[in-house]
Image 1 (cartoon, rainbow, N blue to C red):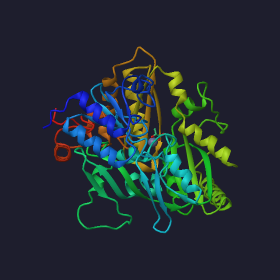
Image 2: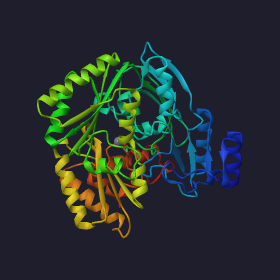
Image 3: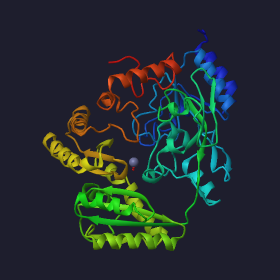
Image 4: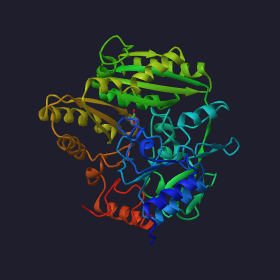
Length: 466
Ligand code: LAC
Ligand code: ZN
């Protein structure tokens, strides 16, 4: 145990980080708490190492001083996974932002944790390669944060989540030591696959610093279409239909509550479909050329139309039209304008249960408060729904609202977090998804890797059972 004082800790960190790498006081406060919350960032200091060695030195010092560290990626967390107190230090990976190597023979890219997703997409596109994970926060989320939360997004039905893309991982542990598993090939069954422990661990077991990820040759053609569908069974039938031979690469479903909100008076978007529908499906098909993608999409939709699976469809005729369709799906402005209070949920459940769940939840929320608006949408093929609950006061307490949602979800055996993680926000409900034995072994792992509880403590679960 070291008796290093706080002022000495800061002075030594300053020496390691060479001044501009260490922010304190007003420089910390001048940053927003998160992408979603403009209040000042709270932290005793913000550490911005520019190399893995610097990061290790910082961690060694902080470990000796028993200083709590909250790792930070693109700050787009939706579950308070990076919330910090005024006594914590935040460690941002923002200066570890190099794409180190694109290896088109091995079909891999080696990245530092702070690389922004969009920057990776652009660097690969220039060489006709692609990293297949994509999501709305692409302009700010970082690969390290995406790995730490096992992010999903739009392509999961074909390519899997972040975990599926990882061949190699490098992690700095709580004591500053390096755990490197930077292999660049898929098959490696030579003992425990340690890197898997850190993927989705929300920065509680180690700090992800570098990774070797899988890349794929880019398909030049992408066709997007928006469909209006009458019945939920038809939505599911459509998915199955499109999964055979159309090159389906995304299948997003939006309930009318979502559609009305995001094409209505609080939105800058307009519905490109004339009528109203019970379900809206936004899909994308990929192929080796634009003509082939459009042909595959058109013929699959024609067949579906002839089978009576859809009521209406628009197929984007240009990249700009495709983008305007996707902008409706990725929008979040309308809910922010219309509601003073917003509760977001990210749940998973069997596809077959989704509509009954959405209906039952709507009824129960109505009973709780007529002021709550429920907007439903999500990555249907992944069994993943996002729920936005919005309203203006007077409204029930957050806990009461969460109880209604999670109680309903538990009746369908769903998970309280599909792709956004647990953070602080979902911690009280984790027991609905994870049994006591699972939680016991999670705590054992935390104890093993971080015995002093210095890495993002209190996230996912508390160190002692409640
Ligand atoms: C989305 C984010 C909220 O799918 O996960 O839009
Ligand atoms: Zn999502």
